[in-house]
Length: 417
Image 1 (spheres, rainbow, N blue to C red):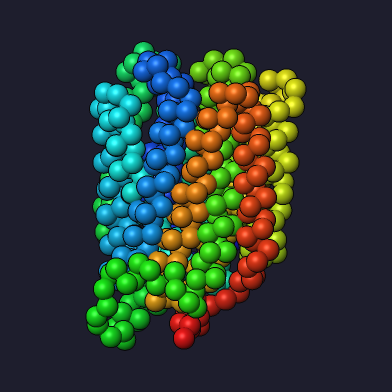
Image 2: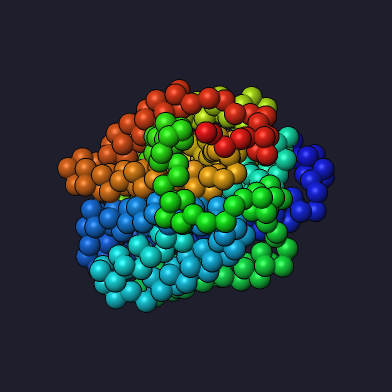
C-alpha cells in the first residue's frame, strides 16, 4: 500500500511533506474551537446557537478565502499563495486566545477563516500538479490524512492542557498554540517549488487580464455546469462532516456526561479511525476510482452517524464504534483533491478547486449552526442525525451528475473553448 512512496521524485516528496504539514497544522488550528465550546458555554454564558455561529462563521468566510486564493494561485503561483495563507491562519488563531467576549471571538474566527479556506486551495492544486497521475490519488489522499493528525494533536493538547490548567486559562492557551504553523513557512520557502505545468503555462501565456476576471472564470460557460455540480457534492460532504465534528465533543460532554479525559479518549479513537480512513480512501481513489470511493463513504456515513448519535448504546460500545465511524466518515475526503484537479485545465484549476471546495464548505458550514438551533428543541444527537443524513443525500445527488476522472493527465486537459 505504501511502496509507491519510494518511487516518488525528490520534488514530489518534498512538496508532499510541505503540503502535509500545512494541512495538518491547518486542522490543528481549526479544530481547537470544537474543544473549547463546552468551556465557553460555561464561562461566557453563551447559548448553543451562539456557539454554532462561532463555528459557522469561520467556515463561511473560508469560502471566500479559498475562492480568492485559488484565483490568486492561478495568477501569481501556488507556492507563494500557500506561504501567505499559512501565516494568515496561524496569526488569527493566536489572536483568538485574546478575545474578551463573543463579538471579539466572532471577528477573529471570521478572519481566521480566510486563511483556513485559502490554504487548502493553494495546497491541493499544488499537489495535484506536482504528483504524476499514476500516484495522484494516493499522494493527495495521504496529504488529506494530515487532517486527522492535526485533529489528533488538538485532542491531545486539549486533554493535557485542560487537565493541568483551570478552564479560564486553558482555552486561551489552546488558541495561542495555534501560532506554531507559522514555522512551516521556512520549510516551504526552502524546499517547495512551483509545478512545471504551471510555470510552462506562465511562460507561454499572454500577459494581461484582471485578477477579478480570473475570480469568475469558472462561473461562466463552459465550466459553470461542472462547477455547480462539484460545489453541490462538496456541500453535502462538508455539511455531514461538520454537523458531527463541531458538536461531537459537546455531545460527549453534555449528552453522555463524559469527563474531559474520557471525551479526549473517545475523540482520539475516532480520529485514529479517521486517519486510517483517509489512507484507505487515498488507496481506493486510485484502485477503484474517485466516484466509487465517494459513494461507499457517503452512504456508509449517513447510516453510521445516525446510528452512533441516536441508538441507545452503552458508553463502552460507543468507544469501540468511534473508530469505524471516523473511518467511513473521512474516507471520502482523500479523493476530493485529485478529483477536482482532473476536472479543470491549468488556466483555471486553482480557481475551480478553490471555488468548489470552499463554497461547498460555506454551505456545509450552515449545518453546525442549524444543529445548534434545532438542539434547543430536540436532543443534540437527534439534531446531528437529521442534518448529517440530509447532507449525505445532497452529496450523492451531486456525485451522480459528475464523470469519473481516474487516470487523466493534468497537462493534457485542454482549456475549453
